[in-house]
Length: 487
Ligand code: BG6
Image 1: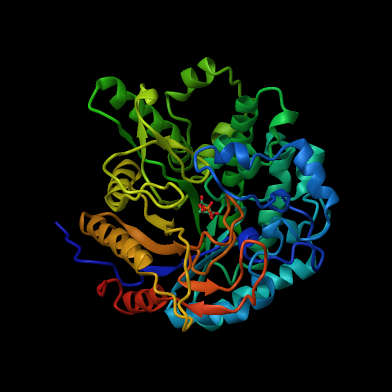
Image 2 (image 1 turned 60 degrees about the horizontal axis):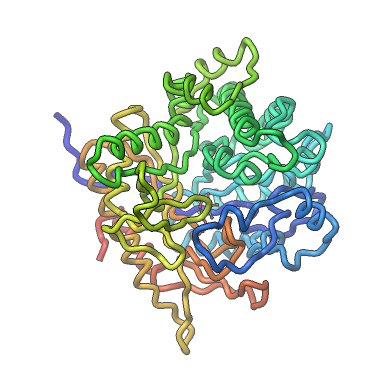
């Protein structure tokens, strides 16, 4: 029997960002508007009803479309990664990154989604970014769609609820996979694909007030994304057999609130609904329970005859996932208080501490998730998001002493190491928001995840200068020791 003592050689240490939260330059060099450009800033006062607060409607889209500046829409200006990528990548190199996860903004390549030709200036930008990463020997890990799509596909087609969008996505995937075939090896087809049924506009460009039954529309959109992901996987393998293509899940492990069989079963159901996505993308078919679930929820999927075969024959090479928190299931929610996260809410777990934004901190849950997913699927796992969103206050001398973030990383990475020693195959770890970026949910800047501080406030004011936090040096040391030095 083989035993493993720690992080393997060639472990892909790094960090992650998303185009729509970092790049800015929302209307430069031919980029079209994307769904993320429709999301205004709002001050987050309540951590529980965040989904309702950030809800994008026809009326809010109309307002956003009429607003042609970046003011009030922080994702439109991001942290100006578009112009500062060289400086940022130099810092990632200094950290010792082996990998850097980023996404391509679809609307930079196909401004309307259905254009006949791609936008050369958009393609050139990512050429430059990948070349810069390669210069330092950093492996890009590219998400094709991270919480955005061209707005024209929403306005003229109804987003992912429309089957035609599959063809546009496949064309986009083919364009970038061909163009970057010698520069990018690791691809993820969709960020947190389960978001499509949790927050359909963010995940699938589906506007709730434009569809009759939102559950029906979001599962339909999800089905189209599954098919599109499989087709892109097939294409990618034809373009370059060396590609490694993965799916991406926001793993939301649910614990039963008590040992009452009702709660235990409810947790099982909630876990099944979360793992439905990896079941389809790794096993190549919908799980058995879903037929009854669809029937009881009035969901009738429109599928085409070849779909089953496409899903079956083009499963992914690895599973990537985000992990921030664990959730709690019960059939008696009224007995417990509720806490939030970003797009979800859950009943409180009295055994866990919560961050200022309501996320329940659970490092051991990460070990559980790794072991459970590896047992279930037996494919390599990649943690592509994990991190602490917190307010940082620079000291008078400019230093940022974020010991709370170091503590977070130390506790979570200890559990990753335990899982590796338990035999789980883990490819890498890219911390979320290697550098402070705009929050996906609230569009706040003050909810910071990075080990690199960016001088900008919630209203876009600041020098945009970058500073190394205390956690920067800690992470650098950890990477240098391949995960051994956690002090
Ligand atoms: C993940 C997303 O769900 O959570 C990221 O993939 C996001 O895009 C991250 O930034 C943290 O959420 P938030 O809302 O705190 O930025």
